[in-house]
Length: 139
Image 1 (tube, one colour):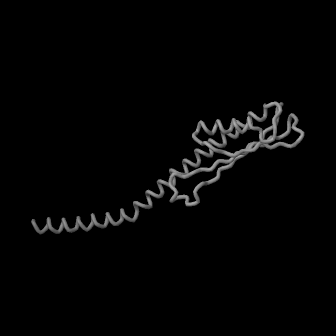
Image 2 (image 1 turned 60 degrees about the vertical axis):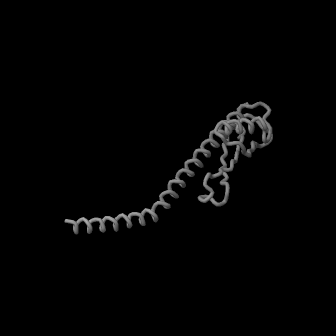
């Protein structure tokens, strides 16, 4: 009986050692994959927030009397929408063809820099996210 216990404990120790080696190989890959999924989700969330802010800015530009090229009120509206989501800086543009008349197209564009939390996944530092909305001028 003692001999059976001894061989069983040796076999169990060998299995435990191989499981530790397998975990040492697989665990970093699993952690890297989970972190990459997390960062992709954050980038997607920021891009959706940017799209909604630019859409709101385009709605505001479509009904704003005396709209100007790169109108500061429209860009401030976009920035305020982004600040609600925690994004502090953006660059934007309001573009239209002269003369501005009812029915003409107005293009509103904005760009933000997505900063990953884990710089190992994205060694470049920041990832620019840009979107634009084209709408008709209604005034």
